Amino acid sequence: MLPEVNTDEEWDRVVGDETVVRPAAEDLCARLGLAGEPLTRYPEGSQPVYAVGEEHVLKLFPGAAAQDGITEARVLSHIEGRLPVPTPRVHGSGTYESGWRYILMSRLPGEDLAAAWPRIPRADRERIVTDTAETLAALHALDPGPLADVLGPGDWDAFLAGQRAGAVDRQRERGLAEHWLVQIPGFLDAVPLFEAENRRQPALLHTEFMLQHLTVDADDGWRLTGLLDFEPAMIGDPAYDFVGVGLFVTRGEPGLMDRFAKAYGRSFDPRQLLAYTLLHVYSSLPRYLRELPAPPEPTLDALAEAWFGR
Image (cartoon, rainbow, N blue to C red; front, side, top):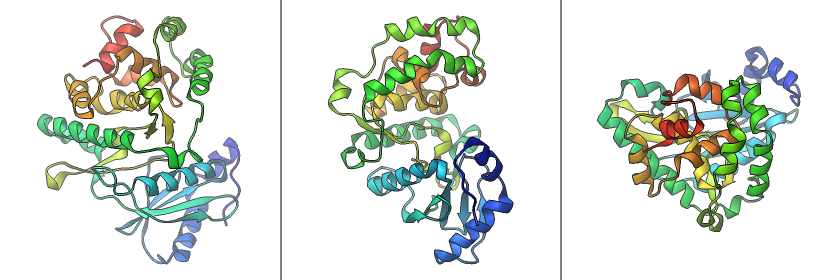
C-alpha cells in the first residue's frame, strides 16, 4: 500500500500526499483495533502524524527515517511517568510495510503552547517557563545509559568536530550574510564546550526543547500538560538543550532566561549557548535573526547576550 521512501525525492513525492498516506494510516489503525476512528492529520512536522479519535496519535516513519521511529518508541517508554509533565504513552510500535514504521501513542491533552503563547498573560508565561525548566532538569537527571544502544552520537567530541568543520558552509547555505560568516571560526575557537562536569554525567537530550513540542490547557489556568516529539533525542552535553530554550521558549524576552536558569538549577555562558546554536544539527542563523530580537551591534558576542543572556 505504501511505497518505499529512501531518498529525498521519494520523501517529497510521497510523505505529503494524503491520497497515498491516509489509506495506509486507516489500514494500520484497523490492524491496531481502531477501525472507524476519525483521523486528523497534524499540519506541522516532517513525519505523517494523525490524531486517531480523541485518545490516540499515530505517527508514521518512512524507511528513510525508520531509525527515528525506533528511537522515539524507546525514549518514550524509558521516560514514561518520570517527568513532572506527561509524555505520550506508547501503546504499540513496529514495522508496517515497505520499510515504514509506526508508533501508536496516547494523545496529550491541551493545545500547542506555541500557538497559545501570544494569548497567555505575562504572569502565566513566567510560571510556564518555571515549569518547563523543571521538566528539562528532570529529563537531564535521568540515566541515559539504557538508551545508549539507540541514541547517538556516541562520541560527543567527534560529533562537535564534525559540526564545527561544516559550520560556516551550513550557515552560508541557509543564506547567512558574510559579515556574520567571517566571525564564526574565531568565535568557535574562543568558546570552550562540554565542560568537565558535563563530561562526568552526559544527559538524555530532547534536542528540540521548544514551545512547539509542549502542550498547555487554557481551561486549567494555562497548566502545562505535556512534552512530545523525542525522535531526535541524543545523549550529550545538557547545554545543547538550552539552544532550543533560548531560541524557542524564552526568545530574548527580558527576565525569562534568568527565571528558566534558576528553576533548572544552573545557568550556562551565553557565548557557549550561541556556539552550540551554530553547531546544532538543525541550525539556521538567518531564520533566528529574522525572528528574535536584534543585538545592539552585529557581533556574535552581542548576539549571544541578546538571545541567551539573563
